[in-house]
Length: 373
Image (tube, rainbow, N blue to C red; front, side, top):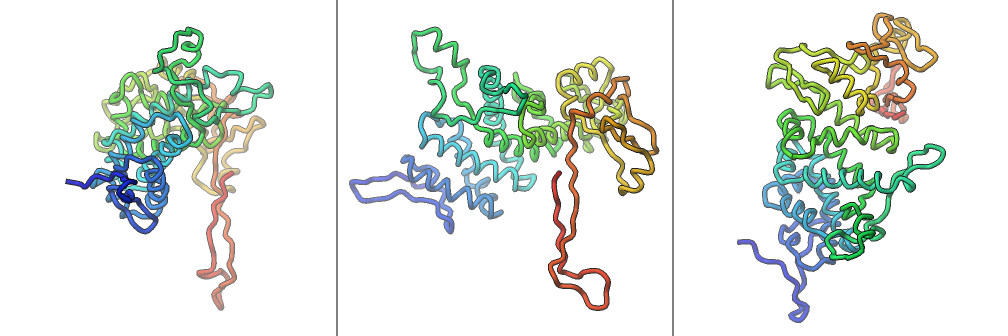
């Protein structure tokens, strides 16, 4: 049985703490908040740099302990906010940097309900504070308040009906950093078909993908839009274990193909597939238009420009010079090309000075740098 980790100041016994060079599972059972914050700070570094520590956390119950901290911590002051944020960062590091087995353990430990709470509370805050999040110029402004700046929790027995209705059951207003970490973790978890299946029905009344789709809206910062779009495109992946079939991309439907390529693709992004025209219309109006990005050819720039020129609205032509102006069910995508941005990685080779003799190209001294535009 694991030894308990209590601090006894009267007996001059300190708590066991995690350091940058030592991991001790007992430190996560500490009852004093300051030693626990210190341990979580060092554990954040260890989980981001050591694959061995990430593996150990999934085997000794440390991952479950971190999730329990996230579920039970009441964020009512700075210290509890630090504890929650550090524990959340540790779990995100384990999930984002881990293997498929480790990521499956993150889902089994109960991390997805925590993420659902974070995303749902953030959306409730956006609906509750419209004057704070929207500007006259239409700029992307989202709340980034600290937990201590929030109204009191709904658990208190206040007799003022006005104060009760103003909270809208929002216990914590999470920061944009928490939203970004949540979406990044879901992006890596949604790569696997057996985990994607649980995102649809395992957490009622929420569908994880329907919740994430709301973060593809232009209201949110570009980085949040990007990771939400990655998750939605992962939701449209085919399931090789079931013969390469896909689900209807309208998340409220979720119908599976009976054979591969049964459903029609969105001709613009060529990712989403729909079982009917009605499903495509509903999906387009509910959020697909925000993460539908035109799919360009896989050739070089010269071959792409030879196949088709870009029009004045920024919508480039598809392969073979044929314009992609509508989906398979007839929806025009030309008007949405102006509101959708496509991230492209531009490789640039930088020579560090070490060149091979007698050759025209640089040797091992060339570095490939990826610029995100």
